[in-house]
Length: 235
Image 1 (cartoon, helix red, strand yellow):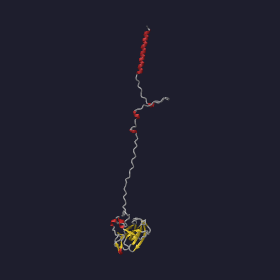
Image 2 (image 1 turned 60 degrees about the horizontal axis):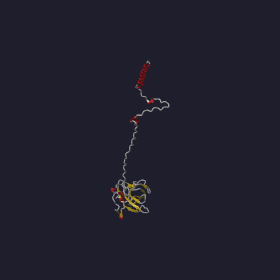
Image 3 (image 1 turned 90 degrees about the vertical axis):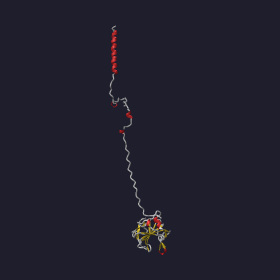
Image 4 (image 1 turned 180 degrees about the vertical axis):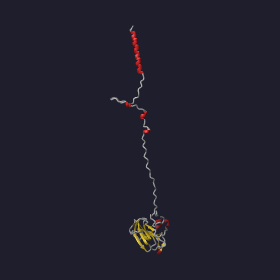
């Protein structure tokens, strides 16, 4: 009979102890967050991987982007049109320069077929100008002959580079300095000055100008005359 009370006491003590232990295990324990960087890796064990959040895999923020500005375009220099130099009066077809400085084609008169003394035809054009006005070479070429004649006075015969045409200048006041036979001359070069030598009237100084087509002999005094007027005016 004495055994039963002892068993009862043991049951009560066991139940109480078990109830106390159960209460200790179920109690909430606060654990402070641990920084993964502070965890010391144990040799032989893999290091803990940090958790990845959506922000960690998103693209870089605007503040972290480097924007490379486009290089400024180089300024383009404006195209400046160069004014064309006005050419000396010349025929569009022949390219001959008007041989008296300061005279325009509109001032010329066609005197090619005018009659002259002794039943002659003029076969030339007279270009009226003041005494001493510069006379210009109508084209490139060379001085073939410098000649002082009774009718033409102080004259010059010029051959073109191809030896096809001869240009005849007459009644010159004087030659340009340095002018000589066989000298190469350029279109527009001063070759002499307007005068009234020969049979020209001192009251009417002018340049007597002729154009000849040379024969096979290339003789300066011989050739077929052609009218200079359309060659100098273009009509």
